[in-house]
Image 1 (cartoon, rainbow over the protein chains, first blue to last red):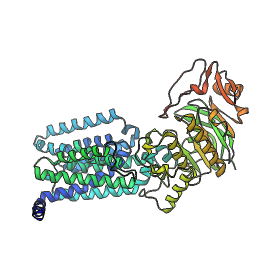
Image 2 (spheres, rainbow over the protein chains, first blue to last red):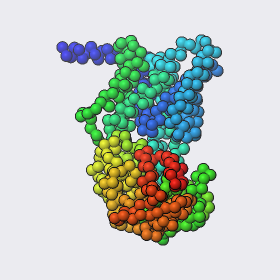
Image 3 (cartoon, helix red, strand yellow):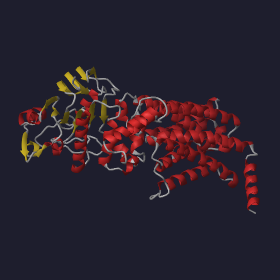
Length: 281
Length: 280
Protein backbone atom coordinates (compact mmCIF):
# COMPACT_ATOMS: atom_id res chain seq x y z
CA UNK A 1 0.00 0.00 0.00
CA UNK A 2 2.65 2.47 1.12
CA UNK A 3 4.79 1.41 -1.78
CA UNK A 4 1.87 1.96 -4.11
CA UNK A 5 1.37 5.54 -2.86
CA UNK A 6 5.10 6.10 -3.16
CA UNK A 7 5.01 5.03 -6.80
CA UNK A 8 2.11 7.35 -7.51
CA UNK A 9 3.90 10.35 -5.93
CA UNK A 10 7.08 9.50 -7.76
CA UNK A 11 5.15 9.27 -10.97
CA UNK A 12 3.51 12.64 -10.44
CA UNK A 13 6.83 14.31 -9.67
CA UNK A 14 8.36 12.73 -12.76
CA UNK A 15 5.44 13.97 -14.83
CA UNK A 16 6.23 17.49 -13.65
CA UNK A 17 9.67 17.25 -15.22
CA UNK A 18 8.33 15.94 -18.52
CA UNK A 19 7.64 19.51 -19.51
CA UNK A 20 10.39 21.74 -20.87
CA UNK A 21 8.91 24.80 -19.20
CA UNK A 22 9.00 23.08 -15.82
CA UNK A 23 12.63 22.04 -16.23
CA UNK A 24 13.51 25.61 -17.26
CA UNK A 25 11.56 27.01 -14.33
CA UNK A 26 13.39 24.83 -11.81
CA UNK A 27 16.77 25.59 -13.37
CA UNK A 28 16.13 29.35 -13.37
CA UNK A 29 14.76 29.22 -9.83
CA UNK A 30 17.82 27.33 -8.61
CA UNK A 31 20.25 29.94 -9.94
CA UNK A 32 18.20 32.90 -8.80
CA UNK A 33 17.45 31.51 -5.34
CA UNK A 34 21.13 30.88 -4.61
CA UNK A 35 22.08 34.41 -5.72
CA UNK A 36 19.15 36.07 -3.93
CA UNK A 37 19.71 34.14 -0.72
CA UNK A 38 23.41 34.97 -0.46
CA UNK A 39 23.30 38.56 -1.68
CA UNK A 40 20.19 39.10 0.42
CA UNK A 41 22.03 38.06 3.58
CA UNK A 42 24.34 41.05 3.28
CA UNK A 43 21.48 43.32 2.18
CA UNK A 44 19.59 42.54 5.40
CA UNK A 45 22.74 42.75 7.51
CA UNK A 46 23.47 46.23 6.12
CA UNK A 47 19.88 47.40 6.63
CA UNK A 48 19.56 48.27 2.94
CA UNK A 49 16.53 46.16 2.10
CA UNK A 50 14.51 49.16 0.97
CA UNK A 51 17.30 50.12 -1.44
CA UNK A 52 17.08 46.62 -2.92
CA UNK A 53 13.34 47.03 -3.33
CA UNK A 54 13.85 50.38 -5.08
CA UNK A 55 16.45 48.91 -7.44
CA UNK A 56 13.90 46.36 -8.61
CA UNK A 57 11.45 49.14 -9.44
CA UNK A 58 14.11 51.00 -11.37
CA UNK A 59 14.52 47.74 -13.28
CA UNK A 60 10.91 48.01 -14.40
CA UNK A 61 11.73 51.30 -16.13
CA UNK A 62 14.70 49.62 -17.77
CA UNK A 63 12.71 46.63 -18.95
CA UNK A 64 9.85 48.65 -20.44
CA UNK A 65 12.26 51.20 -21.92
CA UNK A 66 14.28 48.38 -23.52
CA UNK A 67 11.20 46.96 -25.20
CA UNK A 68 10.36 50.41 -26.51
CA UNK A 69 13.74 50.70 -28.24
CA UNK A 70 13.76 47.04 -29.30
CA UNK A 71 16.12 45.35 -26.79
CA UNK A 72 15.30 42.32 -24.62
CA UNK A 73 13.65 43.44 -21.35
CA UNK A 74 16.18 41.50 -19.24
CA UNK A 75 19.10 43.52 -20.59
CA UNK A 76 17.25 46.80 -20.15
CA UNK A 77 16.58 45.79 -16.58
CA UNK A 78 20.20 44.79 -15.89
CA UNK A 79 21.47 48.04 -17.40
CA UNK A 80 19.13 50.26 -15.39
CA UNK A 81 19.50 48.47 -12.05
CA UNK A 82 23.29 48.44 -12.30
CA UNK A 83 23.37 52.14 -13.21
CA UNK A 84 21.03 52.93 -10.32
CA UNK A 85 22.99 50.70 -7.94
CA UNK A 86 26.24 52.48 -8.75
CA UNK A 87 24.48 55.83 -8.42
CA UNK A 88 23.10 54.97 -5.00
CA UNK A 89 26.48 53.71 -3.85
CA UNK A 90 28.31 56.82 -5.03
CA UNK A 91 25.78 59.11 -3.38
CA UNK A 92 26.68 57.44 -0.13
CA UNK A 93 25.30 55.04 2.37
CA UNK A 94 23.23 57.70 4.01
CA UNK A 95 21.15 58.19 0.90
CA UNK A 96 20.52 54.48 0.54
CA UNK A 97 18.94 54.56 3.98
CA UNK A 98 16.94 57.71 3.40
CA UNK A 99 13.47 56.38 2.95
CA UNK A 100 11.84 59.40 1.36
CA UNK A 101 14.44 59.83 -1.40
CA UNK A 102 14.51 56.12 -2.19
CA UNK A 103 10.71 55.94 -2.10
CA UNK A 104 10.40 58.82 -4.55
CA UNK A 105 12.88 57.22 -6.96
CA UNK A 106 10.93 54.00 -6.64
CA UNK A 107 7.61 55.64 -7.50
CA UNK A 108 9.15 57.69 -10.31
CA UNK A 109 10.58 54.52 -11.84
CA UNK A 110 7.20 52.85 -11.95
CA UNK A 111 5.80 56.05 -13.42
CA UNK A 112 8.37 56.03 -16.21
CA UNK A 113 7.69 52.35 -16.80
CA UNK A 114 4.02 53.19 -17.18
CA UNK A 115 4.86 55.99 -19.64
CA UNK A 116 6.97 53.66 -21.78
CA UNK A 117 4.14 51.13 -21.80
CA UNK A 118 1.80 53.89 -22.89
CA UNK A 119 3.96 54.50 -25.97
CA UNK A 120 4.29 50.81 -26.70
CA UNK A 121 0.77 49.55 -26.42
CA UNK A 122 1.46 46.04 -27.71
CA UNK A 123 3.51 45.28 -24.62
CA UNK A 124 0.66 45.44 -22.11
CA UNK A 125 0.28 41.65 -21.80
CA UNK A 126 3.81 41.28 -20.54
CA UNK A 127 3.35 43.92 -17.88
CA UNK A 128 1.96 41.48 -15.35
CA UNK A 129 4.88 39.14 -15.94
CA UNK A 130 7.36 41.98 -15.37
CA UNK A 131 5.63 43.24 -12.26
CA UNK A 132 4.64 39.98 -10.64
CA UNK A 133 6.79 37.40 -12.36
CA UNK A 134 6.05 34.36 -14.50
CA UNK A 135 8.68 31.77 -13.86
CA UNK A 136 6.88 29.17 -15.99
CA UNK A 137 7.49 31.33 -19.08
CA UNK A 138 11.30 31.36 -18.73
CA UNK A 139 12.95 29.87 -21.85
CA UNK A 140 16.20 27.96 -21.98
CA UNK A 141 18.16 30.93 -23.37
CA UNK A 142 17.15 33.02 -20.36
CA UNK A 143 18.28 30.24 -18.03
CA UNK A 144 21.77 30.43 -19.49
CA UNK A 145 21.84 34.22 -19.19
CA UNK A 146 20.67 33.94 -15.58
CA UNK A 147 23.39 31.39 -14.89
CA UNK A 148 26.05 33.69 -16.37
CA UNK A 149 24.87 36.72 -14.40
CA UNK A 150 24.52 34.58 -11.27
CA UNK A 151 28.10 33.29 -11.50
CA UNK A 152 29.40 36.84 -12.00
CA UNK A 153 27.51 38.26 -9.02
CA UNK A 154 28.36 35.42 -6.64
CA UNK A 155 32.03 35.47 -7.69
CA UNK A 156 32.17 39.22 -7.08
CA UNK A 157 30.45 38.78 -3.72
CA UNK A 158 32.92 36.05 -2.72
CA UNK A 159 35.87 38.32 -3.50
CA UNK A 160 34.60 41.29 -1.46
CA UNK A 161 32.66 39.44 1.25
CA UNK A 162 35.23 39.80 4.03
CA UNK A 163 35.77 43.56 3.89
CA UNK A 164 32.07 43.97 3.06
CA UNK A 165 31.14 42.12 6.24
CA UNK A 166 33.56 44.23 8.28
CA UNK A 167 32.27 47.47 6.73
CA UNK A 168 28.67 46.36 7.35
CA UNK A 169 29.15 45.37 10.98
CA UNK A 170 31.40 48.23 12.09
CA UNK A 171 31.74 50.98 9.48
CA UNK A 172 33.75 53.42 11.62
CA UNK A 173 36.24 50.79 12.67
CA UNK A 174 36.54 49.36 9.15
CA UNK A 175 37.22 52.85 7.84
CA UNK A 176 39.98 53.32 10.40
CA UNK A 177 41.51 49.99 9.38
CA UNK A 178 41.75 51.15 5.78
CA UNK A 179 38.51 49.79 4.27
CA UNK A 180 36.92 52.25 1.83
CA UNK A 181 33.25 52.41 2.81
CA UNK A 182 32.29 54.18 -0.40
CA UNK A 183 34.01 51.63 -2.63
CA UNK A 184 32.33 48.68 -0.98
CA UNK A 185 28.96 50.43 -0.95
CA UNK A 186 29.21 50.90 -4.72
CA UNK A 187 30.49 47.38 -5.41
CA UNK A 188 27.86 45.81 -3.21
CA UNK A 189 24.94 47.76 -4.67
CA UNK A 190 26.14 46.79 -8.15
CA UNK A 191 25.95 43.14 -7.10
CA UNK A 192 22.53 43.78 -5.56
CA UNK A 193 21.43 45.36 -8.84
CA UNK A 194 22.39 42.22 -10.79
CA UNK A 195 20.68 40.05 -8.21
CA UNK A 196 17.44 42.04 -8.32
CA UNK A 197 17.38 41.95 -12.13
CA UNK A 198 17.74 38.16 -11.88
CA UNK A 199 15.19 37.87 -9.15
CA UNK A 200 12.65 39.86 -11.13
CA UNK A 201 12.67 37.12 -13.79
CA UNK A 202 11.24 34.71 -11.27
CA UNK A 203 8.93 36.73 -9.01
CA UNK A 204 8.64 40.08 -10.84
CA UNK A 205 9.88 43.49 -9.75
CA UNK A 206 7.19 44.04 -7.13
CA UNK A 207 7.99 40.81 -5.28
CA UNK A 208 11.79 40.83 -5.34
CA UNK A 209 11.63 41.33 -1.57
CA UNK A 210 10.26 37.85 -1.16
CA UNK A 211 13.45 36.08 -2.33
CA UNK A 212 16.04 38.76 -1.52
CA UNK A 213 14.90 39.66 1.98
CA UNK A 214 12.58 36.97 3.34
CA UNK A 215 15.02 34.03 3.44
CA UNK A 216 17.94 36.20 4.62
CA UNK A 217 15.93 37.78 7.42
CA UNK A 218 14.69 34.37 8.55
CA UNK A 219 18.22 32.94 8.42
CA UNK A 220 19.58 35.77 10.55
CA UNK A 221 17.00 34.95 13.20
CA UNK A 222 17.95 31.30 13.23
CA UNK A 223 21.71 31.29 13.41
CA UNK A 224 24.35 33.41 15.09
CA UNK A 225 27.14 32.57 12.65
CA UNK A 226 27.80 34.39 9.39
CA UNK A 227 28.77 31.33 7.33
CA UNK A 228 25.80 29.26 8.48
CA UNK A 229 23.53 32.27 8.00
CA UNK A 230 24.55 32.71 4.37
CA UNK A 231 24.13 29.01 3.59
CA UNK A 232 20.80 28.81 5.43
CA UNK A 233 19.55 31.90 3.61
CA UNK A 234 20.43 30.32 0.24
CA UNK A 235 18.84 27.02 1.28
CA UNK A 236 15.63 28.72 2.38
CA UNK A 237 15.43 30.72 -0.85
CA UNK A 238 15.97 27.50 -2.83
CA UNK A 239 13.30 25.66 -0.86
CA UNK A 240 10.83 28.54 -1.27
CA UNK A 241 11.44 28.92 -5.01
CA UNK A 242 11.24 25.17 -5.74
CA UNK A 243 8.27 24.73 -3.44
CA UNK A 244 6.49 27.65 -5.07
CA UNK A 245 6.93 26.22 -8.56
CA UNK A 246 5.89 22.72 -7.55
CA UNK A 247 2.80 24.02 -5.75
CA UNK A 248 1.95 26.14 -8.79
CA UNK A 249 2.17 23.04 -10.97
CA UNK A 250 -0.25 21.07 -8.81
CA UNK A 251 -2.66 23.86 -7.92
CA UNK A 252 -2.51 25.97 -11.07
CA UNK A 253 -2.21 29.04 -8.87
CA UNK A 254 0.59 31.53 -9.75
CA UNK A 255 4.11 30.46 -8.67
CA UNK A 256 4.81 33.99 -7.39
CA UNK A 257 1.94 33.65 -4.93
CA UNK A 258 3.28 30.38 -3.53
CA UNK A 259 6.81 31.75 -3.25
CA UNK A 260 5.63 34.79 -1.29
CA UNK A 261 3.48 32.56 0.91
CA UNK A 262 6.38 30.21 1.68
CA UNK A 263 8.76 33.14 2.26
CA UNK A 264 6.40 34.84 4.69
CA UNK A 265 5.71 31.56 6.49
CA UNK A 266 9.41 30.82 6.90
CA UNK A 267 10.04 34.29 8.31
CA UNK A 268 7.13 34.11 10.75
CA UNK A 269 8.25 30.68 11.98
CA UNK A 270 11.81 31.97 12.39
CA UNK A 271 10.72 34.95 14.49
CA UNK A 272 8.26 33.08 16.71
CA UNK A 273 9.02 33.83 20.35
CA UNK A 274 10.52 31.03 22.43
CA UNK A 275 12.03 29.16 19.53
CA UNK A 276 13.07 26.22 21.69
CA UNK A 277 13.68 24.16 18.57
CA UNK A 278 16.43 26.39 17.18
CA UNK A 279 20.07 26.07 17.99
CA UNK A 280 22.15 29.15 18.60
CA UNK A 281 25.25 27.72 16.94
CA UNK B 1 59.24 56.89 21.73
CA UNK B 2 55.96 58.63 22.41
CA UNK B 3 52.64 57.02 21.56
CA UNK B 4 51.26 60.26 20.17
CA UNK B 5 52.96 63.54 19.24
CA UNK B 6 51.07 66.57 17.98
CA UNK B 7 52.97 69.65 16.82
CA UNK B 8 51.05 72.86 16.25
CA UNK B 9 48.06 70.89 14.95
CA UNK B 10 44.95 72.46 13.53
CA UNK B 11 41.92 70.22 12.89
CA UNK B 12 38.87 71.42 11.01
CA UNK B 13 35.60 69.74 10.12
CA UNK B 14 33.45 71.20 7.37
CA UNK B 15 35.18 74.56 7.59
CA UNK B 16 34.79 74.80 11.37
CA UNK B 17 38.05 74.79 13.30
CA UNK B 18 37.82 72.19 16.07
CA UNK B 19 41.34 72.40 17.48
CA UNK B 20 44.10 74.88 16.71
CA UNK B 21 47.73 75.19 17.70
CA UNK B 22 47.68 71.99 19.73
CA UNK B 23 50.94 70.45 20.99
CA UNK B 24 50.83 67.12 22.79
CA UNK B 25 53.18 64.35 23.90
CA UNK B 26 51.56 61.19 25.16
CA UNK B 27 53.97 58.57 26.48
CA UNK B 28 54.04 54.93 25.41
CA UNK B 29 52.48 53.46 28.58
CA UNK B 30 50.16 56.21 29.66
CA UNK B 31 46.44 56.12 30.50
CA UNK B 32 45.05 59.47 29.40
CA UNK B 33 41.46 60.49 30.03
CA UNK B 34 40.10 62.75 27.28
CA UNK B 35 37.46 65.17 28.51
CA UNK B 36 35.66 68.24 27.29
CA UNK B 37 32.22 69.42 26.28
CA UNK B 38 30.32 68.00 23.30
CA UNK B 39 31.87 69.18 20.08
CA UNK B 40 35.19 70.07 21.70
CA UNK B 41 36.99 67.64 19.40
CA UNK B 42 37.42 64.39 21.36
CA UNK B 43 36.26 62.21 18.49
CA UNK B 44 37.94 64.39 15.87
CA UNK B 45 41.26 64.13 17.68
CA UNK B 46 41.00 60.34 17.71
CA UNK B 47 40.07 60.27 14.05
CA UNK B 48 43.06 62.47 13.30
CA UNK B 49 45.38 60.08 15.14
CA UNK B 50 43.84 57.28 13.04
CA UNK B 51 44.66 59.23 9.89
CA UNK B 52 40.99 59.76 9.00
CA UNK B 53 41.07 63.53 9.50
CA UNK B 54 44.20 65.08 7.99
CA UNK B 55 45.47 68.07 9.98
CA UNK B 56 45.02 71.43 8.27
CA UNK B 57 48.28 72.52 9.84
CA UNK B 58 51.06 70.88 11.86
CA UNK B 59 52.08 67.25 12.16
CA UNK B 60 50.74 64.18 13.96
CA UNK B 61 53.03 61.27 14.78
CA UNK B 62 51.84 57.93 16.12
CA UNK B 63 54.48 55.65 17.66
CA UNK B 64 57.18 57.49 15.77
CA UNK B 65 55.50 57.47 12.35
CA UNK B 66 53.21 59.99 10.68
CA UNK B 67 49.53 59.24 11.30
CA UNK B 68 48.12 57.09 8.52
CA UNK B 69 44.96 55.08 7.88
CA UNK B 70 45.02 51.40 8.65
CA UNK B 71 47.81 51.54 11.23
CA UNK B 72 47.70 48.07 12.86
CA UNK B 73 49.42 49.41 15.99
CA UNK B 74 46.24 51.30 16.96
CA UNK B 75 43.21 49.62 18.49
CA UNK B 76 40.06 51.70 18.10
CA UNK B 77 36.60 51.61 19.66
CA UNK B 78 34.36 54.07 17.83
CA UNK B 79 31.51 55.80 19.54
CA UNK B 80 28.49 54.96 17.39
CA UNK B 81 27.61 51.44 18.29
CA UNK B 82 23.82 51.33 18.59
CA UNK B 83 23.40 49.35 15.35
CA UNK B 84 24.92 46.23 16.88
CA UNK B 85 22.50 45.93 19.80
CA UNK B 86 19.72 43.95 18.02
CA UNK B 87 22.04 41.60 16.12
CA UNK B 88 21.59 37.84 16.35
CA UNK B 89 25.24 37.30 15.44
CA UNK B 90 27.33 35.86 18.22
CA UNK B 91 29.88 38.05 19.96
CA UNK B 92 32.61 35.79 18.64
CA UNK B 93 31.62 36.32 15.01
CA UNK B 94 31.32 40.03 15.61
CA UNK B 95 34.77 40.35 17.16
CA UNK B 96 36.23 38.07 14.47
CA UNK B 97 34.95 40.42 11.76
CA UNK B 98 37.81 42.78 12.57
CA UNK B 99 40.57 40.20 12.10
CA UNK B 100 42.17 41.03 8.74
CA UNK B 101 38.80 42.57 7.92
CA UNK B 102 40.30 44.75 5.19
CA UNK B 103 41.57 41.73 3.21
CA UNK B 104 39.68 40.53 0.14
CA UNK B 105 38.18 37.05 0.13
CA UNK B 106 35.69 34.99 2.08
CA UNK B 107 35.01 35.88 5.74
CA UNK B 108 36.38 32.57 6.99
CA UNK B 109 39.12 32.65 9.62
CA UNK B 110 42.02 30.23 9.49
CA UNK B 111 43.68 28.78 12.58
CA UNK B 112 45.81 31.90 13.31
CA UNK B 113 42.71 34.08 13.12
CA UNK B 114 40.66 31.89 15.43
CA UNK B 115 43.54 31.68 17.90
CA UNK B 116 43.90 35.47 17.89
CA UNK B 117 40.17 36.01 18.47
CA UNK B 118 40.20 33.52 21.37
CA UNK B 119 43.30 35.21 22.79
CA UNK B 120 41.75 38.69 22.90
CA UNK B 121 38.50 37.29 24.32
CA UNK B 122 40.49 35.58 27.07
CA UNK B 123 42.25 38.85 27.86
CA UNK B 124 38.94 40.44 28.82
CA UNK B 125 37.41 37.22 30.17
CA UNK B 126 34.70 37.11 27.53
CA UNK B 127 35.24 33.66 25.99
CA UNK B 128 31.93 32.27 27.28
CA UNK B 129 30.06 35.50 26.82
CA UNK B 130 31.11 35.59 23.15
CA UNK B 131 29.07 32.47 22.39
CA UNK B 132 25.82 34.34 22.95
CA UNK B 133 24.08 36.42 20.26
CA UNK B 134 24.78 40.15 20.67
CA UNK B 135 21.05 40.77 21.13
CA UNK B 136 21.22 38.75 24.36
CA UNK B 137 24.11 40.67 25.92
CA UNK B 138 23.95 43.69 28.19
CA UNK B 139 25.53 47.05 27.43
CA UNK B 140 28.45 46.27 29.74
CA UNK B 141 29.00 42.88 28.13
CA UNK B 142 29.01 44.37 24.63
CA UNK B 143 31.58 46.92 25.81
CA UNK B 144 33.75 44.06 27.05
CA UNK B 145 33.54 42.39 23.62
CA UNK B 146 34.37 45.63 21.83
CA UNK B 147 37.32 46.14 24.15
CA UNK B 148 38.53 42.65 23.25
CA UNK B 149 38.19 43.53 19.58
CA UNK B 150 40.47 46.55 19.94
CA UNK B 151 43.24 44.20 21.14
CA UNK B 152 43.40 42.22 17.90
CA UNK B 153 46.87 42.43 16.28
CA UNK B 154 48.46 43.46 19.62
CA UNK B 155 48.18 47.24 19.29
CA UNK B 156 50.41 49.55 21.32
CA UNK B 157 47.86 52.35 21.49
CA UNK B 158 44.13 52.13 22.26
CA UNK B 159 41.72 54.88 21.29
CA UNK B 160 38.46 54.36 23.18
CA UNK B 161 35.74 56.83 22.26
CA UNK B 162 33.20 57.17 25.08
CA UNK B 163 33.18 53.55 26.26
CA UNK B 164 31.10 54.53 29.31
CA UNK B 165 28.21 56.03 27.40
CA UNK B 166 24.81 54.68 28.48
CA UNK B 167 26.31 52.40 31.15
CA UNK B 168 25.22 52.46 34.78
CA UNK B 169 27.85 53.40 37.40
CA UNK B 170 28.55 49.77 38.29
CA UNK B 171 29.31 48.78 34.70
CA UNK B 172 31.23 52.03 34.17
CA UNK B 173 33.55 51.08 37.01
CA UNK B 174 33.95 47.58 35.57
CA UNK B 175 34.95 48.91 32.13
CA UNK B 176 37.42 51.41 33.60
CA UNK B 177 39.04 48.81 35.85
CA UNK B 178 39.30 46.30 33.01
CA UNK B 179 40.86 48.88 30.71
CA UNK B 180 43.30 49.95 33.39
CA UNK B 181 44.42 46.39 34.12
CA UNK B 182 44.86 45.66 30.39
CA UNK B 183 46.82 48.87 29.96
CA UNK B 184 49.28 48.06 32.75
CA UNK B 185 49.48 44.34 31.93
CA UNK B 186 50.13 44.89 28.21
CA UNK B 187 52.17 48.06 28.72
CA UNK B 188 50.26 50.09 26.14
CA UNK B 189 49.00 53.66 25.88
CA UNK B 190 45.28 54.37 26.24
CA UNK B 191 43.26 57.41 25.22
CA UNK B 192 39.90 57.09 26.96
CA UNK B 193 37.32 59.76 26.26
CA UNK B 194 34.44 60.37 28.63
CA UNK B 195 31.81 62.89 29.63
CA UNK B 196 32.65 62.68 33.30
CA UNK B 197 35.97 62.75 35.07
CA UNK B 198 35.01 60.97 38.28
CA UNK B 199 34.68 57.38 36.97
CA UNK B 200 38.24 57.68 35.58
CA UNK B 201 39.91 59.23 38.63
CA UNK B 202 41.46 56.02 39.94
CA UNK B 203 42.75 54.89 36.55
CA UNK B 204 44.18 57.82 34.67
CA UNK B 205 47.78 58.99 34.67
CA UNK B 206 47.00 62.29 33.04
CA UNK B 207 43.99 64.11 31.72
CA UNK B 208 43.59 65.79 28.34
CA UNK B 209 40.91 68.45 28.50
CA UNK B 210 39.63 69.93 25.22
CA UNK B 211 37.55 73.03 24.72
CA UNK B 212 37.38 76.30 22.85
CA UNK B 213 39.75 74.96 20.16
CA UNK B 214 42.45 74.36 22.75
CA UNK B 215 43.84 71.44 24.71
CA UNK B 216 45.32 71.13 28.20
CA UNK B 217 47.30 68.01 29.10
CA UNK B 218 48.55 67.31 32.60
CA UNK B 219 47.78 65.64 35.90
CA UNK B 220 44.33 66.08 37.37
CA UNK B 221 45.69 68.66 39.82
CA UNK B 222 47.30 70.65 37.01
CA UNK B 223 44.40 70.64 34.57
CA UNK B 224 41.21 70.45 36.59
CA UNK B 225 41.48 73.93 38.02
CA UNK B 226 39.31 77.01 37.77
CA UNK B 227 41.70 79.06 35.60
CA UNK B 228 42.53 76.27 33.10
CA UNK B 229 38.92 75.17 32.63
CA UNK B 230 37.65 78.76 32.46
CA UNK B 231 40.00 79.22 29.50
CA UNK B 232 38.78 75.97 27.85
CA UNK B 233 35.10 76.66 28.41
CA UNK B 234 35.43 80.36 27.60
CA UNK B 235 33.51 81.27 30.74
CA UNK B 236 33.99 81.37 34.51
CA UNK B 237 34.38 77.82 35.85
CA UNK B 238 34.74 76.70 39.46
CA UNK B 239 36.17 73.36 40.48
CA UNK B 240 34.66 71.85 43.60
CA UNK B 241 36.24 68.86 45.34
CA UNK B 242 34.00 66.80 47.55
CA UNK B 243 34.93 63.49 49.23
CA UNK B 244 37.38 62.47 46.52
CA UNK B 245 35.07 63.51 43.71
CA UNK B 246 35.54 66.54 41.49
CA UNK B 247 32.77 68.74 40.16
CA UNK B 248 33.22 71.25 37.34
CA UNK B 249 30.74 74.05 37.94
CA UNK B 250 29.62 77.07 36.00
CA UNK B 251 27.57 79.18 38.40
CA UNK B 252 25.25 76.57 39.90
CA UNK B 253 25.52 74.11 36.98
CA UNK B 254 27.54 70.94 37.06
CA UNK B 255 29.01 71.13 33.55
CA UNK B 256 29.77 67.46 33.11
CA UNK B 257 26.35 66.31 34.27
CA UNK B 258 24.77 68.77 31.92
CA UNK B 259 26.41 66.98 29.02
CA UNK B 260 23.59 64.65 28.22
CA UNK B 261 24.38 61.07 27.45
CA UNK B 262 22.97 59.63 24.28
CA UNK B 263 22.54 55.95 23.57
CA UNK B 264 22.68 56.50 19.85
CA UNK B 265 25.88 58.52 20.06
CA UNK B 266 24.26 61.52 18.42
CA UNK B 267 25.12 64.97 19.64
CA UNK B 268 22.36 67.38 20.52
CA UNK B 269 22.46 71.08 21.00
CA UNK B 270 21.96 72.35 24.51
CA UNK B 271 22.50 75.89 25.54
CA UNK B 272 23.19 76.15 29.18
CA UNK B 273 22.41 79.23 31.11
CA UNK B 274 25.49 81.28 31.83
CA UNK B 275 27.86 78.97 30.01
CA UNK B 276 28.98 78.59 26.47
CA UNK B 277 30.09 75.06 26.00
CA UNK B 278 30.77 74.92 22.28
CA UNK B 279 28.28 72.30 21.11
CA UNK B 280 28.25 70.97 17.60
